[in-house]
Length: 104
Image (cartoon, rainbow, N blue to C red; front, side):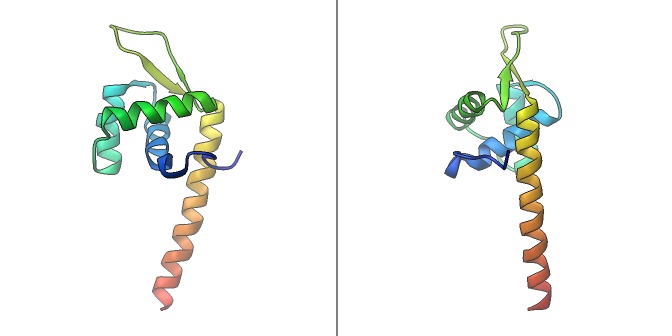
């Protein structure tokens, strides 16, 4: 598995959701709060739930049993693998970019 295939311009919300869920299962509102801390801005419901739907369809996250009328989601093993691959790709790109900036 390599990164987040097929997400195109929606890859950032998907990535932020996976990072959020890597810390534990959360419902949508809790994910929005966590993503605001991680990424600096809170995603709107359309962006969040559109990305959740695509992540579920890809098998990267799964809906968990409802608690107190809230629907939590958890990251799957496939989601962990995709997140690991994407973060490694980003680290390699960042390292190269920073190295080139330092020598220019």
